[in-house]
Image 1 (cartoon, one colour):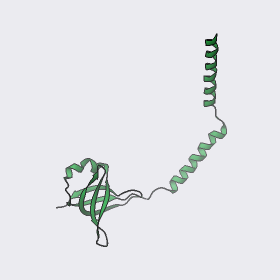
Image 2 (cartoon, helix red, strand yellow; image 1 turned 90 degrees about the vertical axis):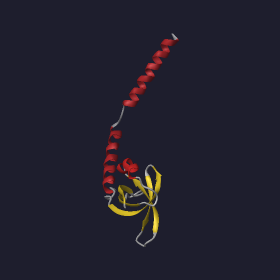
Image 3 (cartoon, rainbow, N blue to C red; image 1 turned 180 degrees about the horizontal axis):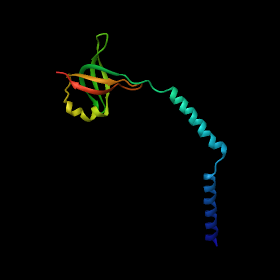
Image 4 (cartoon, helix red, strand yellow; image 1 turned 60 degrees about the horizontal axis):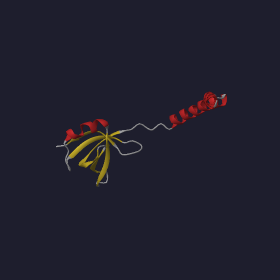
Length: 127
């Protein structure tokens, strides 16, 4: 008798939980549409500006990790300063083939994102 009552109770609980989980009102269905409409407007207004590609040269100072390197570059004031650059996926894959050593002169092209370090898209050793 106890098993039968327990079985009926469990079946009722499962049925109730399924009905509650599947039920929805019109009010709940309208909210996501309004939220999506607002987020689309915001994303259009806040689209990041296009990234500009720039060329530069300097002296290679070493690889910081698998994703970035340090290069001494000369700024507009004539000062030589170390700068960290991230490597693009393509450059990361080919990086060992460049066989760069510390103080090798390099020429490179990079993109400057709105957030984060500049990303090198092309690099070559200068003789």
